[in-house]
Structure formats: structure tokens, C-alpha cells
Image (cartoon, rainbow, N blue to C red; front, side, top):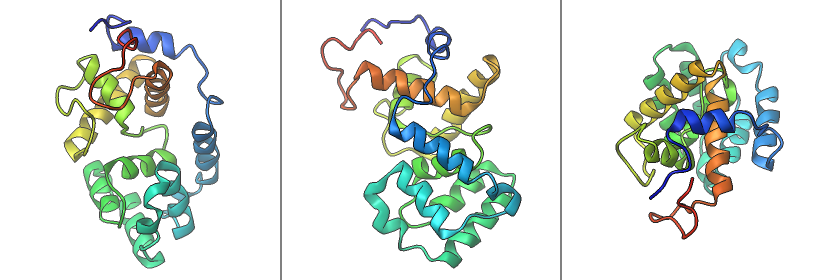
Length: 195
């Protein structure tokens, strides 16, 4: 399969020239949520309604599971997440809430601190894999904490290289993959090889 770019650095050089902020509803919603959640880190926790908004933004399909968490459970986890500096522990704590897996936990961290975090997503992961930046889980499914660590490390590495934040790198990769219409099935559709 032929790649459109020699490496991920070249892809990002091209993608970061584009403004992805107004490209789709999900991106606009994320920008609004980040603004609404600015106070969370200073306050030291997020509320159940804030939690449900963040989870719904990432995946509305499991809202019934997110809703099963009580205010007390959510605020307890939120306080612990924001009190620790151990990033893996943050993910473990968020993952302990009903319905929250690695992708949703990463979305929560990004929404409350987009300068430090990006979202682990199947589209982003597949581009990282395609360009040799990660070497496991080619389908980008059932993410583990180790997958998240690898993804976040790569997002931060490229963010530092391009003097930006991990969220911007993640969004550029997401939008590039999405525009290419590269299917989320295991094999690419004809005509999408030149990503």
C-alpha cells in the first residue's frame, strides 16, 4: 500500500496548516465543552451533569451506563483524578466508573486539560500505526492503558515538535483520517490507499 506522505511528520506539517476548529459539529462541541469546563481543575472536581456532558460528547451510545453513576461516585473519582499527578492512576480511576473505558477517560482528560491531553481514537491510532509510530493493535480496538500511554507519548512528542498542544495533533490526525474516508473496517476501501 502506498502512503501519501513519507512519514507522520510530513503528514502533520500539511495538516497543521489547516484550521480544523469549524470542520464538524463534534469539534465545535468540544471547543464549547472546554470553555464550559475551564473551572474544573481549579475547583478540583467535576459534577455529574458535567461528567455526563463529557461522556455524551465522546459516545452517546452508552449514556445509560454513564447515567448509572451517582453524583457521589463521580465527584469522588473526579477529586481523586484531579488530586493525583500519576497519569495512569487518573485513567484507572476514570475507567472505574460505569461505561467509561480508555477512550472516554482520555476524552474527559482532554476536555478538562486540552493543553496536556488528546483523545485516543480508532482513527488517530490507525494513522499512528500506518506510519509506524505504534506497532501493536493495528485495528485500533479494545485500547489498553499501554496503548493510551503510547498514543499520548506520540501526541506530546509531535506537539513539542510543532510547538502546539496534544489536542491539536490528535485533531489533525482525526480529521485527516476522516477526510480520506479510510474505512474503520480492517481492510481499506479501493482508492483510499494514498493517505
